[in-house]
Length: 289
Image 1 (cartoon, one colour):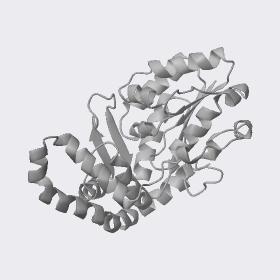
Image 2: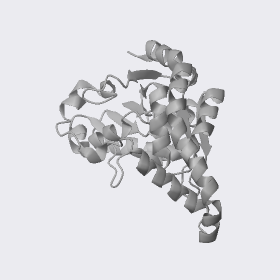
Image 3: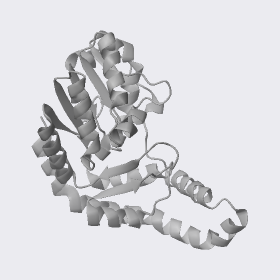
Image 4: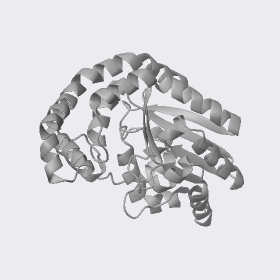
């Protein structure tokens, strides 16, 4: 049995792929590939959060379900597994689970998009969940080569979020870790090779043949317009400061700060792109098949 681990990265079309695989669960199973069906959101995020803290039990349950269905390949997909580029617990848990479940080969699939293009999309996306300042994001990316948010939504089960900017560094680190763990392979895909969808080559040809109905607009986690992003960040701020009188007291300073953060994205994104362009090219050259 083989395990395909799709770890995103974030803002590389992962949601579309997950809708596609979830919608075709039965057809994929008929072709020998198991994508554990999800009743609400199509990604394996809950399993990923457990793996990020070293717990392989949800993955073991997927493998058992795949065996019962007579499948030879298991597909695990969650962009929250981007944390495996940073934290050794997820690779170790996946390797141990694979070994214990009799999986003979593990492929780690990573879709790479230019960091300068990821930056504004990520800023727009995060307003759904937390409050971030674009300059702080820029500073962390330039200073560390990544973004890290510990327990971003307390009580919701997410241990942390990790967002990679220095792609060559992080993929080399993952490759070394999984090489030490056994029969693992790290494979990169270029986001620009997006037809029929980014990362399409991670699926064997017989799997692609059964994906006959492409999902609709609901499967595209497209970047929202600036006004919607601003409203989202206002909502996040008011979550932290629910008292109406305190909201009034902070509003002038907060509005100035938010406006500067929104306006700064267009300045910071190309600088991020310039800083990590060579790392992006090197990662594709090293890990594409």
